[in-house]
Image 1 (spheres, one colour):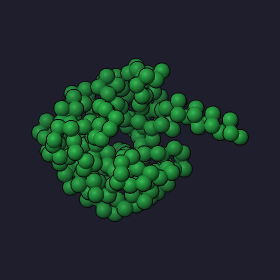
Image 2 (tube, rainbow, N blue to C red):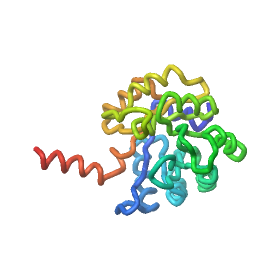
Image 3 (cartoon, rainbow, N blue to C red):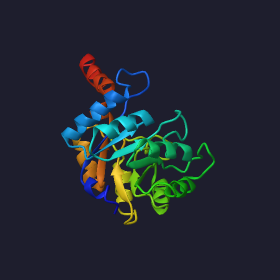
Image 4 (cartoon, rainbow, N blue to C red):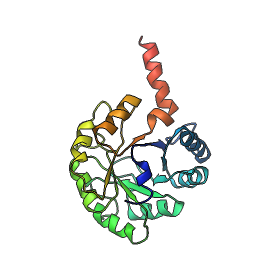
Length: 227
């Protein structure tokens, strides 16, 4: 197991992202958020965009999982080999990319992309998967971290209320020893995070429920105004 991965077992990883046009959409702000969640116990942080990756890398002492979202449809999380190289150059300790089997913008398959990345990067890779099949493809390609990030966000699986515990359960007994399972996606409460871990996740990623005040405000606003 890669030395960056072992300390993540049984821990919380926090995704620090803001969407374009939002008040917090600034690399300095995301770096401050990352510092705050590290203080709270996060063992790694996930950062989006090259400027954010650089800023967060300079601000924290825990591993930075880097992604680059480009577009809004289809494969847009670190979608091409060029994006992978840029994320690595920005300083990411762990490279995360779309791990589905959907067509990629540069025509490469997921496995071809992974093999090309391995030629220039010896850090761990994280595959943002959407199903049992895509997760197994990623694991067999040698990806060390298998995330349920995109489960419920493609046509492969229905959208669950909370993390996809059924998929986590399926994967917990199917992944090879060279890969670990990280639960990500719609983990909105501590109870859901605990359930994901208890179902078999090696670690759990939480984003919106910790680092996205706009969404949190809408939850409370809805609760108050409909009471």
